[in-house]
Length: 499
Image (cartoon, rainbow, N blue to C red; front, top):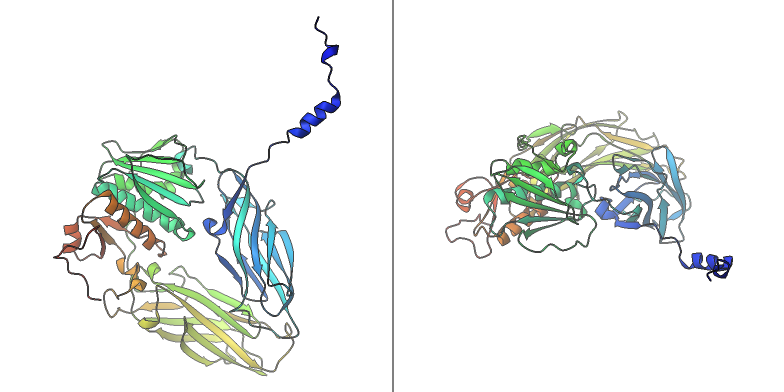
């Protein structure tokens, strides 16, 4: 006879059983800072400085902490590092000069996330030993080896509008074994557009055969695109384990379909399939001169004690051309030095001093400086500094100096001494505003090499390249700058520029 009393179990056994099976741990995701677009080295070059660190937040993840290494500058006695999200103080970390570096964890749970980006600003207040005001410009306090810890796991896109994530580590593009010019062109467009957005975050781009196997990806931030010519024009999100988009179209529309993958028009796509027939954007026009405001640089200002420096960058890729000598009509202002101190204003391009003059009591900068072509790189730092000397005082007692380079300062570009100066320093701006691409064999292997080269060049550029895929004959016979890829040697009748 069955008895319920015989099945009675002591309550203590239930407790033991519960302890033996702990609750599952919530999923966590750790992402390297460079993958998120955080600079590998964040510099705080003054006693009081701040650096904005916007952190992209993929769907499904919640930022939990920023983990980073603080490298302490020489002559530091004490200080602190603050983390702010808008007007909210997230954390204040005390710093001491008796340590060379420390690993710190900054909580981010209370940070403000809007439109998929965490608003984060880091600020420092540093105090030096004794009464000296050391120049920490060249040996600043820095943060390095940063990573962000998230709660949760990345969500797969449910609609086309979510296919392009805020974080992308790897892009796989699948093409037929013998891709057509239209298919190669579409692949080049996708690679260039992806590299223009993610290229400086170590994005890996690979071209693979559509006929080959497709295994799982090692990265949670991988996207795949299959491109194929078809009479039907559409973009479709598949149900593969790794998020994949299928792009179909005839030669005339395939490029427009691919351009939409990374355009703002994707915000209009709310289903798993869409067709877009809008025209492609035109190549950027050549720039011969413009103000800092017109070039997107804007005004630059700085504030410090003893000496102050305002910097801006001259990026030839943002000008979409190779330039010769550059002339800058500088306009700005500065704090006149006190009567017991002298002042000197110095303008430099990289390590080259362009001009210097005595800082008078007017506090006005109106000066034309010339940068010789030989001092220009692909990217050149232009600095305007005010340096003072004279009667000393304890650090923090002297009145701070302020220096402003106004956005109305005008930049004028000269003609280069040759159409395309030799050396990799002239790339990719020598291939702008548009370039042609061709392969000798038309094979998938050569197409993959060409697309990879374009993606690497794009990672060096401030604006998108505009590649046009053509036949080898069109490239060789034309006058448009281009890239020719061959798995063998160059054609015997091809005349290359002299080094």
